Length: 477
Image (cartoon, rainbow, N blue to C red; front, side, top):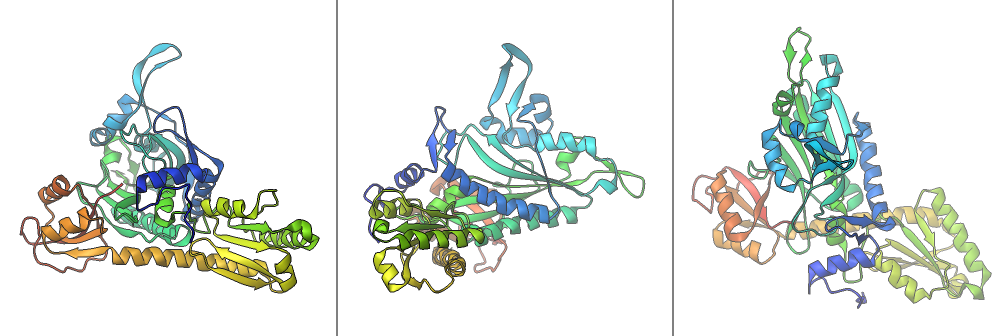
C-alpha cells in the first residue's frame, strides 16, 4: 500500500506518527491549556459509537444513568484517606468563587466515588432498595505532568459505574460482569483482543479490595490499560456511613463496586490498527463506514443516479455512508478517506457502468473487489463490514499471541521488555519487592494476573522463591 508522505512512518517515530494522525485525521485540536484537547466532530463521533454500545449493554444489565456534581468539597474527599492519597497529587483545586475566597477548597472530580457514596447514604434505607446500579457519563480532571491526546490528558471523557449490593458474592459477580462487557466491547466494535485479569496489590485502584483490568497490547510492544472494574468491599460504605436495615431487622453495610472506560479507547484504536497512511477504523466505531466516490460523473448521469440509490439503500440499513460528490479529484478523495480510516470505499465510473459493477476497496488490507450492480449492494456491504471487523480482530489477536513470551530468567525478562517484544509472561512469588525491582531496573509493571493461570515454572526468576502466579509484565502507556 502506498505510503502517505505527510505522515512520519510509525517505525521511525511512533509518538510523532500518533500525534500527526490525531491532527491530520481531524480527531482533535489542541486547546490553550496543556492537556485539555478539543474533540473535533470526527473524533467525538467515535466516542459516541462506543458510548452507544456500552449504554445499551449497561441498561440491559439493569443500570440507570445519573449525573453527579463537578466539584467535591475537601471535607468530603478526606473521609476516605486512602482514596485521597491516591489522587491528591493529580487534583485540580478551586479556592475562589464569585470573587471571594471559598470557606473550604473544592476539588474538580478526579473520579466520583466520594460523591456517589455521599448520595448513597441518603437514598439507601432498606434491603429492598438493593441493588442500586448507577452509571455516569462525564469528564474528569487529573493534572498529569505528561500528556498525549486521548491516551493521557488532564481532562478526559469517560463513564463510571457505581453500584451497591447486599452481599459480597453479588458485588463480585457485578465486578466481573462489567469486565466481561468491556472485553466484549473490544471484540464486537473495537476489533481489539484484550487480556482480562486481576491487578496486583501494588497496581490496584486506591481504596479497592480487588481491581480487574482489560489490557491491550500496542504495536510497539507496550501495554495499554483499557478499562478497569473494582470490587470495593465495604470500606467506602463504612467511611461514608452507608447502611441499610436488613430483613432480620439489623443494620448492615452494603458491598460496593465501581468500573469505567474512557476516551483512552480512541487512542488504543489509533495505535492498534493505524498504519503509515493514517487511521484504520474498525467498521462499527467508524463515523463513516462507507464512502461512495463518483468517477467522471459528468460523462454519464447514470453514475450519480446509481450512487444515490446505493446511498439510500445503505441508510435504510442504518449504515453510516457518505457520497462525496465534491469537485475534488478522485485521487485527493482516496487519500482523504484513507487518512480518516473509512473502512470501505465504493467507486463508480463510466467504465464500471459499462461493465455493470462497482469497485470496492477495503481500508484495513487494501483488498479490491468488483460487485455486480445486479446484486443487493446494501446486503453485501453489511456482510463485508462484519468480515472487516473479524479480519482486523484476528490480525490484532495474531500479534498478541506472537508477542506474549514465557520468560524463565531475569535476562529473558529484560530482553522482552527492553526490545519491545510485548508481554513477558512470568511466574511470580507474589512479593511486592520483586515488582519494585522490575519497575526500578526495567521500567515495567505487572499489567495483570491473567485469568488463564497455567504454571510453567516453580520459582520466581527475580528472587528464587516459590512461584504462586502467572503474571504479564510490560512497559505501559
